[in-house]
Image (cartoon, rainbow, N blue to C red; front, side):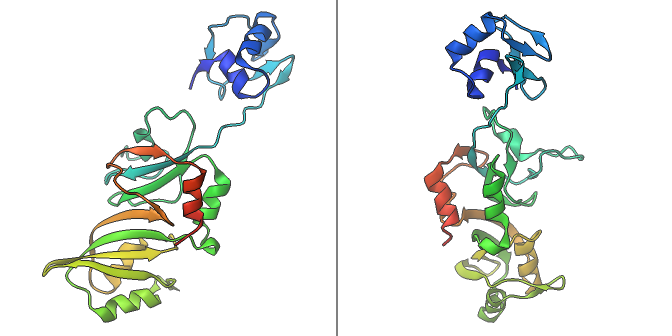
Amino acid sequence: MKERLQKILARAGVASRRTAEQHISEGRVSIDGKVVTDMGIKIDPAQHEICLNGKPIQLTEEKIYILLNKPAGYVTTLSDPQGRPIVTSLLTGIRQRVFPVGRLDLDTEGALLLTNDGELAQRILHPSFEIPKTYVAKVSGRPSGEALERLARGIELEGRRTSPARLKVIRETARFSLIEIIIHEGRKRQVRKMFAAIGHPVLSLKRIAYGRLQLGSLPSGQFRIIGRKEIEKILAGR
């Protein structure tokens, strides 16, 4: 994204914006080896080398944390060869380059964290930290208590046993059940495969929480910036 040169210098921490303007006017700033004195110039710092007094500046990107209510039909990748819509296209006005923390299937909706903080993403995703993720699954039929207990204890999926899960029936009808399920693993389509394994395939699925951070009333397709206190809710587990 293109920004004014003096703003880029200020963001790099080498000078205030006013002082940066003075540096530019004095011919102390170059772009790709060429001295510039134009205050109005806009460039993409990711595409050009900017030097002050002959030394390249280093941009330290501000960390950002975003909670998105992902709609169904979006992929949680940064590009898609099939041309399907990607989740980052929903982040209007966000300047930083962010990536999804984990994934939600194309047909799964709900809480998705995006950030440019790789260290935090690793903490959330690595199984050793056991960060719980809470889902509400609408499943076909009415699973028996025994079947749900099997899921709670862990079942064999593709040669590996799932870790213990917590389940709670929210609503039952003759045709479907709403079940809250909490897991800390992140295998591909894991919740769907778990319910399919007991003969009650998932009809729809929504993630409603990371740790203690709830999706709440955030509308589908909308996002909000979250701060350190809410990040702590994720890391604190449940």
